Image (cartoon, rainbow, N blue to C red):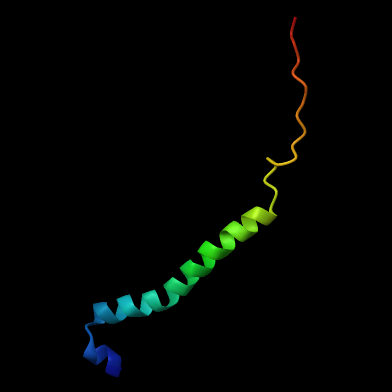
Length: 55
């Protein structure tokens, strides 16, 4: 409550939300490319089907 009295409620809410959202954002930005590189989206090693000529 002492921190709330020193800052306005809006400033306290901003600091509080940044304190847990910033680490979450960093973790997400680091983990997403790692997971994406490990996951095959079906684009790599896709066997190409021969083209069919409709003649």
